Length: 174
Image (cartoon, rainbow, N blue to C red):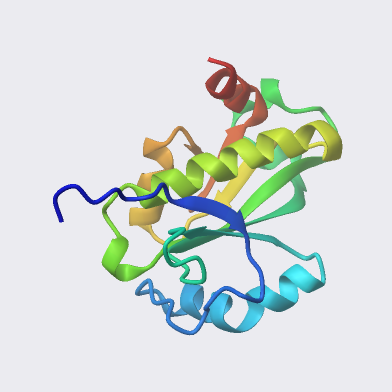
């Protein structure tokens, strides 16, 4: 409607007041996670879950992502990225476990908005928790292409992608 002011969308921690039942992104495992598991993960501090909402409908979830701490073997890091990680047998990292946007709002840049927020949160938390990179296990080739287009580097022969904190620092600080 002409003249209508659309409020900015907001990303906030997931809470019990958020409506999970109506969320449908088209990928059953991502829908099921939000509807049945996210609340328990937050309560148990297993995952940080962050949701995208419109302040005009603050309980309706437009999209979400999860973050948690993880480790992986030094040898899994591609040669060109190894200069950014410590030479320990296990490397600390942050895992972007899930990222989804409700079906009718896809292809509007909201996934990139959620990803940018996740990258920034991972970078900020790395100062206090310790994390050498952000990792994502893409759910499909299409998802992997999305992450690659946003600066992630794919590990050989897999759908796992990484973004070193030093690369994030250059993005955040520029």
